[in-house]
Image (cartoon, rainbow, N blue to C red; front, side, top):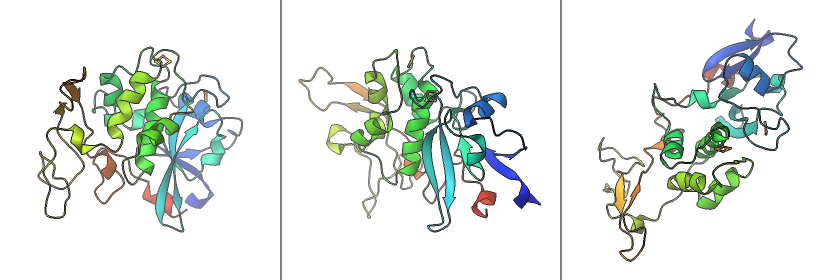
Length: 241
Ligand code: FES
Ligand code: FES
C-alpha cells in the first residue's frame, strides 16, 4: 500500500525512504545517492552551499509551492511527500544548461565553484516561486543566505540581473507585441517572455555603451500554463497525499 510508504521525489524520480534513516539530513541523503552537486560547507545553515529547492502541494490553493532550503538543516523524513530539485535536476552540459546556470557561467559568477550550486538553486527557486519577474532587490534578498569567498558577489549579482524586471528603454530592439500588448517571441512567433540577445546602446557617452546582454528565454513560463519541456513538474502522485 503506497500510503504506508515514505515517498519523496528527487529530480522527478520517485524514491521510497526505508526505515532507519532518521539520523540523516537531506544533504547527507542526496550525497549518499550520488547527487554531489549539492555541497557541504558549514553544515549549520550559514553558507548556503547546500541549497536545494523543495516543492510541496497546497491542498487549499491546489498549487505547488517552491522554497529554497538549506539541505544541511533539513531532517530527511521531514521531506516526505515533497519534491526536491537539486542542481543536477535543472540542467547540465549534456542536456543543456538552465538559463540560471548559463548566466552565471557567462558572467564569470563562478570561480572555485563551491558556492555555485547554492546560488543557482536560490535563484532558480525565486524564479519558480515568482509569478512575475522579480525585482533586483528581491534577487539580492534571495541570495542573502549564500556566501561566496571568491567572486566578491558583484559578478553573481550582475549575472542574475537579467532575470529582474527590465527597463525596456535600455534595449534598442524591443520585442514586437500583439494586439493585447503581449511580447511575441521572435523565434516561435507566440506570446512569451523571451527577447533576443541585444546590443545595449543606452547611453553613447557611457563606458558601457555597447554591452552584450543575454536575456533569459521564457523562464517565467515554468509554472504558467505551458510547462517548458525541460522543466521538472510537481509529481502528480504527491498532489494526492
Ligand atoms: Fe552551509 Fe548548509 S552547508 S548552509
Ligand atoms: Fe568560490 Fe564562490 S566561486 S566560493
